Image (cartoon, rainbow, N blue to C red; front, side, top):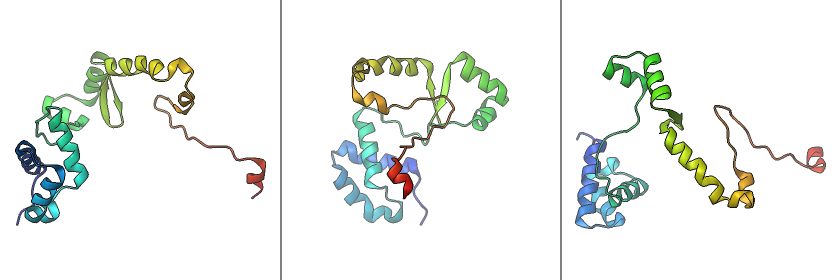
Amino acid sequence: MASWSCSEIRTVLRYNFVRGLSIDQCLEEMTPALNNDCPHRTTIFRWYREFQRGNFTLEEDRRVTYRQIEETLYLHAPAIHSILCDHLQVKKLYYLWVPHSSRVTWCRKMPKMFDKGQSQHVNSIVTGDETWLYYYDVPTKAQNKV
């Protein structure tokens, strides 16, 4: 028997969501029919959350690579980079392109979230731009001897 595609599984999830089935009921109903193709409970939860937000799109993957853009628009990588970075002001964060306005909004929320630096949690924030920083807690002299 052929395996189920992601869009087919999401369609079944949407149908079960509209029927009013809980996550556990949905999983219980899908497991015998899909066997190894049955999604994990966490995946079902994530899609139910999207459906609750009103997002009923069933698209495969919203991430796009430079190569996919090149093939679709017949443009070279430098032109694509210029359009994305210079004109649209998006930046690639964690394999996702995040618009400049979203980054600015997040940065403006930070002082409010951490009581303008008075919160002790503000010391746990590590920021950087295209730099890898490793947090290392320096041991005491006694721990160094061991």
